[in-house]
Amino acid sequence: MRYIIDMIDDMRENIQNSEEYTLLAILLREDDSKNFQNTGEKAITSLYIDHDARELQLGFLDENITTKNLLNLVNSLEMQAMMYEVVIKISNEHPLMPVIGFGENHEQKQYIFFVTT
Image (cartoon, rainbow, N blue to C red; front, side):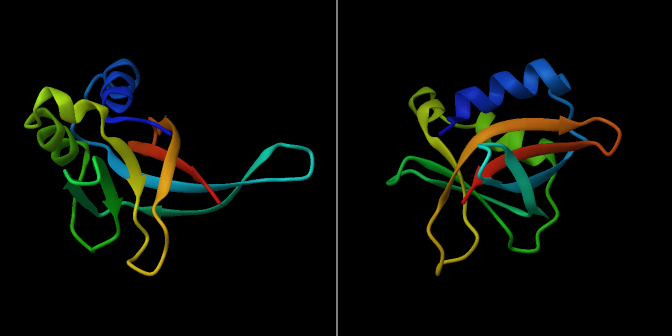
C-alpha cells in the first residue's frame, strides 16, 4: 500500500513534478514463479479525495486529467492528508485496489500506478 506522501516523493524524484504526464493504472498478477505479469492497463481519468476513508481514489470517469491536476489536488490538501492511501477505483461494484508502486514512461509521458489482483 502506498500513501500520498510516497507518490509526491516519487513524482518529484522521477518526473521532476512535470505537469504533462498522463496517468496510467497497470494491473499486475503474480505467476507461479512469483514474478509479476502485466495483465492490463487503463488510463486514469478521475481523481477523488475521500476524507472519511482517508483515501485518494483514482478512477475512470472519462475526464481529461494529467499530473498537473493530480499535483494541484494534493498540493491543496492539509498535512494530515499526506498519509491517505492511494487506491484505484474501477467501479462501485469492485473493491478498491491498493496501489503497490509507482513508475514512469518518459517517452510516452506516462506516470504509472501499479496494482495487483
